[in-house]
Each structure stands twice: as C-alpha cells, then as structure tokens.
Length: 358
Image (cartoon, rainbow, N blue to C red):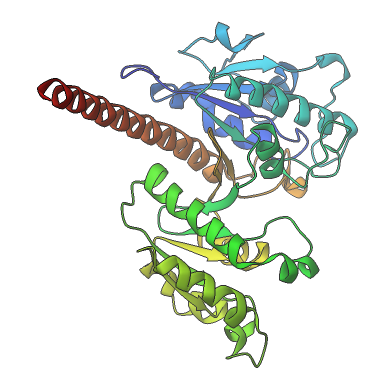
C-alpha cells in the first residue's frame, strides 16, 4: 500500500442465507467506499445478484473477477469462489451449500491475505455448524485464522471507539474456564491487548482493567480463590514491568458504574463476561477484531440473524465499522512499520559513522 494507493479490503461472504450479504451490499452499495478503499467480496456473483434484487439495488453494478489481480479500483469487485450452479439463496434457511461457500470464500480470502494481495480481511457471519468439514474443524473464525497463520497467541478483541474488551478464554464451555485460567495466560492476554492498543490504536501508555472470575471478584476468597491465587499474582507481576494494569474488578459493578470509561481496554475472563456488556453498550458500532495476527482481520459483532435475513431490515452499521476499522488498522500498522524502518536506518547510519571515527 503506497502513500497514494487505496487499501484493498477483502470481504468474505459468510453464510449467504443469513444477513451477511445484505449488510455487505448496504455497506458497499453505490460504491461509496471506493473513495477510501477497494472492496473485494469473496463469494458468488449469483448470490450477490440475488440480494441486489431483494434489496432493490438494481441500478448498482459490481465487477466480477476470477482473481484479485484483476480488480477494478473504481468498482466493488466480486470473486466467484465456487460454482454458481449449485447455489440457491434461501434467506433464513440453514443449508449445506451456504456452509460450503462460507468456507470456500474464507479460505480463498485468507490465501490472498497471507500472500499480501489484500491489505485486510472483513469476515461476514458464519454458521458454526454448517461450515464444519474435514477442512474446517474450528469453533469460529478466530481459531481458524490463528491456525492458518500459525499463531498460538491470538486474542478476540471486541472494539468500538470508546470501549475495547479482550477475553482470556473465548470459545470454550464454561466448565472449562476455571481450569484454563492461569497466571501465564492472563499475562499473555495482557501483552496482546497492550501490543494491539499501541500498534493498532495509537495508545502509547495504555491503561488496562482486569475483571475477576467469580461473583464480587471472589469476595476475598469467600466466593472463589482464583482472584487471590491466579489473577492478583498475574497483575502484580505485570505491574512490576511498568505496565498500567488494574483489578481484578467485580464485573457487575465495573460496568454498572461505567468504570470502564476510565480505561483504554478491559480483559474479561470468559466469552459472555466480556461480550454481553460489549454488545449492550456498542452493538450497532462494535467490531470483532482478531489481535495477535500478522495481518488485519475484523468482523461485525453480530451473527447470521436468520430471523430477519432477506427482509431488508438488517442494520449495516457494524459491517461498515468493521470495514472502516480494517482500513484504519492497516494504515496504522503501515505507518508504524515505516517509522520503525526509518528509526532503524538512522541508527545504522549513526553506528557506521561512529565506527569510521574509531
């Protein structure tokens, strides 16, 4: 991505019988995003055409291509990821074909992301059941992407302009959370949050709040020992490194009193502890960002919403924010890389001059 070049943003279609195609088309329709990026939808021209009719967007045109190198920067591009002949759009219905296209579009988009052919990936919602196959045996996008990039320290980071929440444990049963939480895990997640806040969001000295695992953060051991035995020691060790980390806080009071506004990010112990308040406070503009990957991936913070699919009532705000955030993070990372490269070059020159003087 050069100084004058727009970022190329890949968008995987997700389950086409959910609201994914609808919010995608509402976001990119009219080519309004083409002023700031080049959108590439990985999916099916037939499916996009069907939703274009359902949404009465017949005057809007897209550009069909076979590979990303053929993109038209003035239009929205669509890459066919499997044969259109077997695809029948049935909004609100769970079908094997929708699961297969969801995987094929994701796979193709990730291949181009890894190869540097697109600058960021935005994923529309999938159905975690009909996408399962011999090639996809993951709880969700986050785990699939971590495996694809060979990363074992990924972070589900729910982000909006004012609220950012990471989770120590993501897609695991509640009964496994207690035995999964460890001092090492908490420190690792704090490192990922801190790194992302600095690298992706420009927070130079971030303040991070940590929630307790048990009700009332354990009530001094009365309602559980994890806070005293695991979480507090992790925070003490992390503070000794000069980091601004606070807690553990009881989750109910922390959000009930709006204490989250005093921090740059929050680390929750498990999925619903973090995502429930996030979706209540930032559902329309919230974004699911996978921190810890070498490439940028965002997603709207909602699911397939089969109950409203195809009815032209889905709100595209979260999809738009996911696209905007992907653009911003990709640019932030590039600018930081340029600064670091310039600093390294300057340091090398200084060392050479010093050695010549010696």
